[in-house]
Image (cartoon, rainbow, N blue to C red; front, top):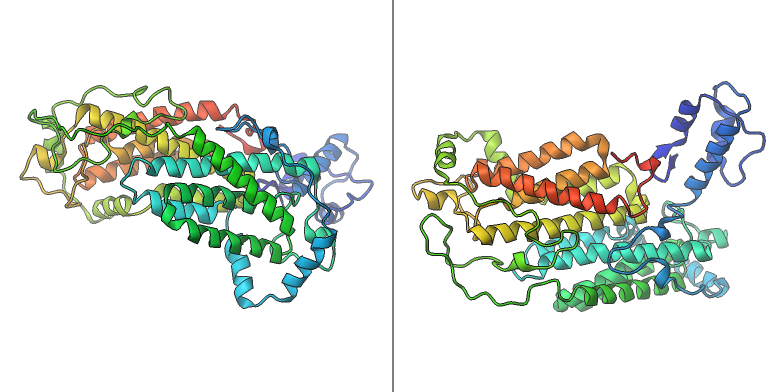
Length: 483
């Protein structure tokens, strides 16, 4: 058994080395069982009693104070607190009826939508959309999806613990919880909150998908009701809340994307990057979230790349270096790694904390990308195969935008710092992963080493500034063990 998905009860007892319970903790059979069967020395300890009571409380409730965490683009969670829910007596029959009619397809939908945190599936969809979006809105759409899900989740948690509505399987024993019991009040449904945000933002940026995401949301909400964990009114309230917050945050960020039109002019000086077209040349003019501006950490101009070119031409690719180059060039390395770590740390069972992590990471990608593109189109740094036209990169095709600094290195620098903050026990691994990603661009022959070193340093500065901001959001605590 784990406390808020982080600390397990037996470990707590080992640390205390004492155990005393005079009266069983009502409603917490797991703790009582441990207390009755433990072989630890038993003696009265007021400190341990307090610790066990805290453990019981944390196990029973997921982040009960998350409604007080600071939000990004709305004033606070309390600002949009929902009114009290209606009586659920009449809805019990609806839940029972759905459960009685379940077939194999319905059960598959329950398991599908229960996988991961509430925003998990929407993250995957947005990842496919924005990474193939050649417009200036792609990075904004990804950032806004994650930030709005987090902000709306904080509103939901404020509302949940203001009204404390029981889950259906608690309210009526005839209703079965067909998934792991969520340890938070029922109203509003957190999965529906995420769906309300996602459908609104995806429809706004990708209108051709509006009908499809609405149908996905309807299937998801039906699955939560059939699972016995929410009432129909919980899903309706959650969905409308998510829509409301998304609409407000779309409006809040309407001027984030630069509206200027590029004149198509490229520098003509020798030694600078040239191409038939340039990808997102004005992205560096976008408004940032945490940085004061995209140029706040702008590096100095690139050097002459003569020594870098000499090093690259002398480099002998190996099987492992080629594999590393193609791996970072073709996979969503940082997104996949984050999802893995969220699952490994059981944070998918903790919707506010998972949403917070996704939001911070998305802000890091957005600000890191904007800062990198500011530098790229300030200096128009050339690529190796343009500096020396006899050079053939391992990756064959070089990206259609300037090379200095490396975007992979810059985003890796941001992510390495943020992930080290999220999961401090593995900080060395994440920072090494950032170096591996930067090195992959040298190994692929599409960046000079200077591009990578400068990109990593830029990313680290962006990551450090974001961490400085989020440390004050109220979510850090002793249980998280932040560094």
